[in-house]
Image (cartoon, rainbow, N blue to C red; front, side):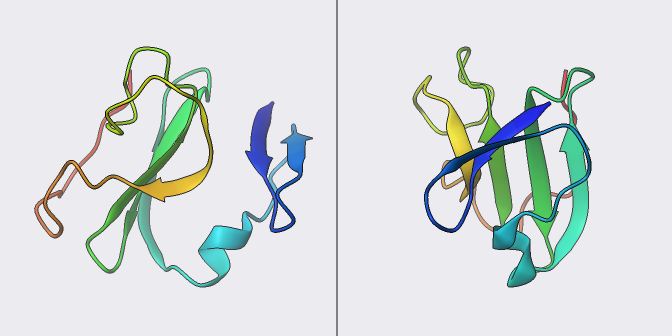
Length: 88
């Protein structure tokens, strides 16, 4: 299962593949997730890295330990410098 906020800022919990509104306007190069799908990263064609999910151990690179329910750009890394991501 995965949870995210839809375009109306309502939490949505899904257990099947579901279109995430954010990606209708952002082209994805690669997607990475941990084995439990608790958090995820997407490397975009633009060179940006976005992440979302559980974040209790700062694993999303956001600088805070709060959950992130929508894909959010990781601004702690310089753009166009990420070529590969791994989630543990």
